[in-house]
Amino acid sequence: MVRIIINGALGHMGKVVERICGEDERLTVVAGVDIEPREDGAFPVYASLLDVKEEADAVIDFSTAAAVDALLAAAVEKKLPLVLCTTGLSEAQLDAVNEASKQIPILRSANMSLGINLLIKLLKQAAGVLVPSGYDAEIVEMHHRRKLDAPSGTALALADSVNEGAGGNLSPIFDRSGRRAPREAGEIGVSSVRGGTIVGVHDVIFAGEDEVITFTHTAYSRAIFAKGAAEAAVFLAGREAGLYDMSDVIG
Image (cartoon, rainbow, N blue to C red; front, side, top):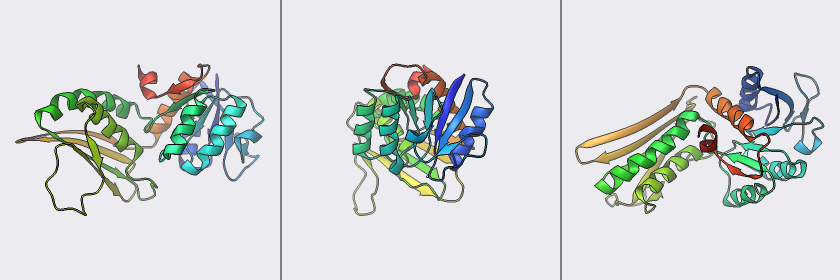
């Protein structure tokens, strides 16, 4: 049985993770961390990971970028494997993640979905064929009105995958409103839509002469991210220190 601590336990995704773990015979949630601690409920919730008394095998984090600095420090101090699902991290925070991974196992992914991570692999192959043949790559991502970061971490990961497959010479363009000029060949346009309750839609478009190829991933429920995080926690428990991602989980 893999014992789980949920960071951001009382948030929307934290509650989804709790439900998914409760449905998985391999997992049990022993504690949570949130800004409003509690002692009642299915498990205790603490204000800080450092306050957690229960023994655990991994932490699953769906919180905010503002909480990641303290989380990393506490996970290192307690020697806890960390599944880091929070997006919108700064360059300094990404550097801190890399440093922490020298002491504990950390699995970080812009998107925990199995489908998205398979798409990332497929895009490398597609971009390697299409971009050198003159196809333009564009990404459009859509999320709910409450999402804080734009573009999404997933859109950036997809753009990186396209760029890698195309040979590494493409540059993301996030805003064309301030210029009047034709599209340049070395661009990857990344556009964001925010509204309603959209869980997540990502379109990767390869537009060529008289032909358009589109890869689309649609998330209908946040449960797909929680399921991926649960699989990641099972994978990470007992691993050596290092930085992992979902490609290690799906093989």
